[in-house]
Structures are given as structure tokens and as C-alpha cells.
Image 1 (cartoon, rainbow, N blue to C red):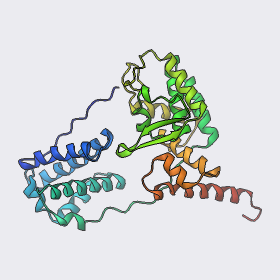
Image 2 (image 1 turned 45 degrees about the horizontal axis):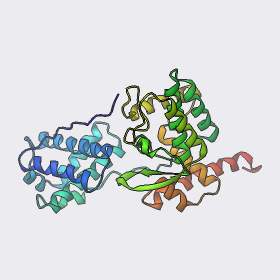
Image 3 (image 1 turned 60 degrees about the horizontal axis):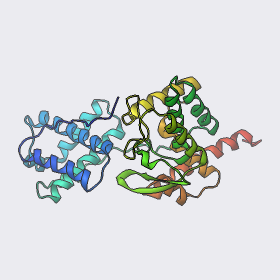
Length: 314
């Protein structure tokens, strides 16, 4: 399946239609939101406006949004909860709405302080779930064995080696072009918010990518995607996720063993071997050190397990 633009419909009328178009353009041009992020924001806003159509009895415009009360927003939260939507998704949806309402205020279309009084559902603190070093290596080896097409086998192996060896997000890896393929000890990566960072590249990563590209049947023009699907288009994240689910089943790994878990493993294993948080923050492209500090909890949990297993009085 090739990546295509996602069409999202919005239940809106009048000046709100133009406001939504300007907001989405602003997300792309000013915020430099990725396609994945922009689509997620669009779906969140669409869900809210669809709810409002039933809630108000007609499609909303900017005046309607300016008149909404805290109770209206709470009704929406209750509606989403009754649908069984995860609290994390509800929280993200409220973040999207706050972003959109701030945009309406800045552009003079609508002011509504009521949304600021509505609390986002409290989320449980979670820690990243890493893959054991041995399991990570087994998964990489098996990824190559499961494919009959040699170039696809090399592609899957190279991609997982890249995720684990450089700590990339799956979207960052699949966003690489052939011009970005590493030829030296570092490579350039474009992360969230179009922020650029440089990450070190191990020889095994560089060699795996070179071996894949050497037998890939599609031309490696500078602007072409580095990782491609069977038709030569950019490899879809869903294909990678499906492949990792297959690996998980074969190896008996937990459901938390996802493509993103290879990134978690990269950070966790660096920290366990003495890497400092500031360096790991730079390598991962985290804007805040507090995000990286979650990995100290993972390492502490690992140490606690070793202690409980090994200490004679545990």
C-alpha cells in the first residue's frame, strides 16, 4: 500500500470552513507539522465538529464556537469516553482543540476562554518498553529469513538495524531519501517539527543499508525514498508494523515489541552502558530532557529486577 494524501471532511459552515483551511495551512507552513501529525489533528477536529453538529442541531460556524460553554466541551469529553476512546486519544484531541481555538483567537475569528477551564483527562505515567538486546538481534536476523525476495529481506533487516542502531522513529526512517543514505560516520535526520539532527552511524548500519540498496530493483535517485515497497513507492509504516507483529509471534515477544520499541531499546541500552542523558536526548531528538528521563525509570526497573533475583535477602 503506497502513501497517499488523506482526505478529511469537516462538518462546518460559513467562515469556519475558511478558518479550518487556513489553520491546516499554518500547521504545514509555520509549525512544519509532519503529514502524520497534520492528519491526526485533522481527524481530532473533524470528530469534534461532527459531535457539535448533533449537539447544536446544525453545523457550526465561528460564532457558534465562540459561544460554547465549559459544559459543551465536557459533553464532548463524555461522548468520546462513552465511545470507548482511549484516554490518551481523548487528551490528544483536547490538545488539538486548544491549538485550533488559539489559532482562531490569534487570527481574530473567535475568542473562547471556556476551553481553558476544561481539564484534560489525567493520563497514567508510562515508561518506554524496550526489547532485550538478544531479542532485538534475533528479530533482525529473522526479519531477513522470513522474506523470499532477497531485496525485501535485505530491506527489512536494514530498516530494523537502522531503528535499533541509530534510535530513529519509524517516520524518520521512512522519510529518508537515497541522498540521506549514510556513507560516513554520521547521517542527517529530520525529526518532529522538521528539526534536523545529526546522529552517529555504526559500520553495521551503513553496511546493511548499502547491501539493501545494491540489490534493490528501483533506481536510487537522490530524491527517491530510501526504503521502498514492492512497487517502488515509499514504504508504508503499516507494512513495517505488520512485519514486526509477525516477528513477535515467531519469537514469542510481548505486544510491546513494536517498531518504536527498537528506538526505546537504543536509548535504554545506551543508558545502561553508561551513556549520559544529555547525549541521549540529542541522539533521540527530544525537545525536553524530561522526555528522555523516562529511560532512567526503565533502567531503575531493570536494576530492581536484578537485585530481587540476585540478592540473598531479597
